[in-house]
Length: 134
Image (cartoon, rainbow, N blue to C red; front, side, top):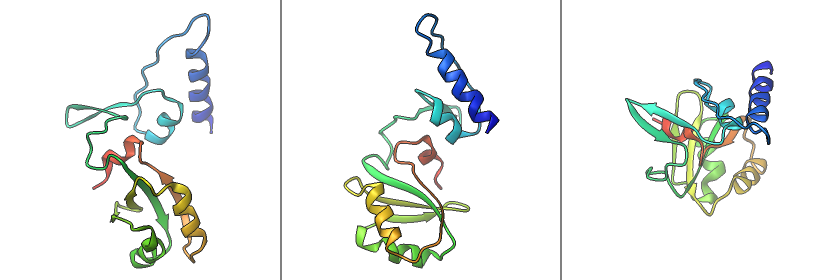
């Protein structure tokens, strides 16, 4: 909580009307950094990558990271009517890919109408988190 407060304060101070200033923040906590940043740049094997990079195979897709207490088959069955394109296990959570016409709201409705036991869900379609999917 203290880390998030400090990051929010830093963002607020950097956007001062009288004396705005840039901040370069180095962190391995992508989610926290993305919440307060206007731009995220990171290195992957020495190559610069940008959060808004749309050259990815995953561009124009809805990508959701989800952690459930259910099996992959149960998760797949609950989301099958949304025509999920693929479902990958990424070391603790699943990454589900859908057409861009399927929104997080559609996915949440499908989950709400199922017996899935969801521990965590996040839309990573535009997050740099999508670059770290196996």
